[in-house]
Length: 135
Image 1 (cartoon, rainbow, N blue to C red):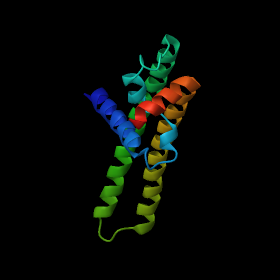
Image 2: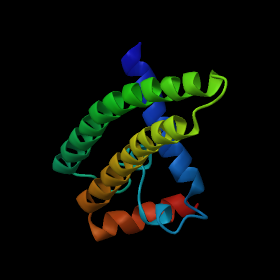
Image 3: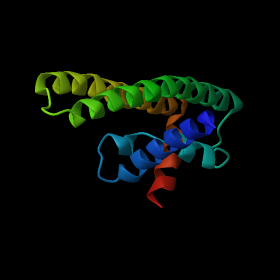
Image 4: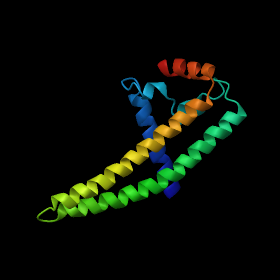
């Protein structure tokens, strides 16, 4: 069940990035895993590329699991602080730094994955994916 939730989160995040790519100058230069997977035959993805991308996704998923658990824990702590009367602003802001750093690490991990995927693809494959995405 936990693994399914992580996979759903991971793909929801990548779909979200993909959907925003039209307006995102960074995202439109990268390729989400599901785009590559859905068109692997069309772009002529080699077995060594498949293996490398699959390995990168698995490593990122493992890191996402840890980061998501930590983020949930720290977010719950911050929510508890916000229920107190009066709210200790300095403690909440300190906790917010922890939460935002975890969110930053998740985004950084995701960006790193997308970069590794792009670097695994040839120029021709990238061009084909760009054309496919534009359809």
